[in-house]
Length: 368
Image 1 (cartoon, one colour):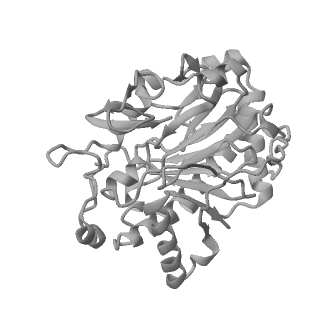
Image 2 (cartoon, rainbow, N blue to C red):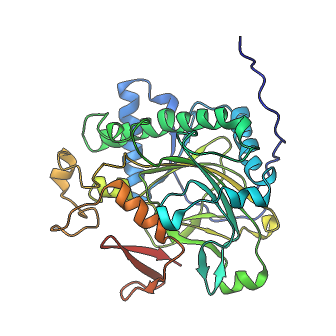
Image 3 (cartoon, helix red, strand yellow):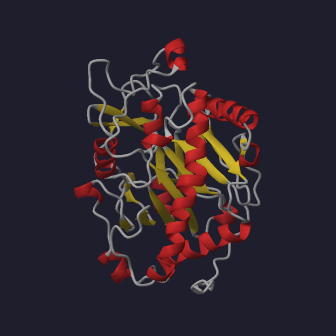
């Protein structure tokens, strides 16, 4: 009988919440425990549809992991940064700029933020197929647990959300799930990331922004809630608000892929990361994410069979002109990944505080 003893890893101590009174976004909480009946799923689908057509952000609770399991997730995440040498991080550095793939490490100062300031963020990205490439020695003992996390995120969180989104479009429940097969060729991945405090000079030059306002590349992003306030979302009223920490909740947002597939009915969430409030300013911020993307060969064109889209019309032809051909998920992710934080942005002629770049003929906006 196999041993149930988990490999020992150092305990990661979650930091305290901010002591300041912050203006938090009022986001819906989706309780997965209500989704076991058709009536419950219909109720959740209505909540998710409302969230994704307005703010694009919501929380998920009762997602299948206990608080203790989530604590272990953060313990393992910290291993990627505290138990791997700088030499090994460089050895397993990703090839974002040449291959359009985030697999491996993104080291500090890879992204240009603003005013000549480069980022102070480390990332470790690992494909849902954890055996797709080699990993640092410190990571290898916990690979089975990372594989379990990827499967849990994909099957137990992303797929149920995709079913609710399909119901909101009045399509068969498995419509979007069938575009997100776990064993297909694709780039859905777990990301561990650590933000390190910056100098006051860099904060001034970059206007306290650590990652400019942007939309995510894929379809659904999962972010395990943690106490350090830094994530903000741009509301429909044009105002930035903080995203509040809820213990053992997952923060969910829509990416470009869902906006494209829904013809703009569901909106890709505009969000950014800024310097934490004073009470947390000296702390490192550890994050755990799962970035879901459709299969590489999926064309990101509106699902025109949706009765909802037939009634309301295509708000945006996936941001593409009516005469253009929608790219596949592979083409879109490679184009955006290779360009992110590396190409020159131009000020928008229409929108103040917005910078733009063109990828695959599509204008991608960054908000500052």
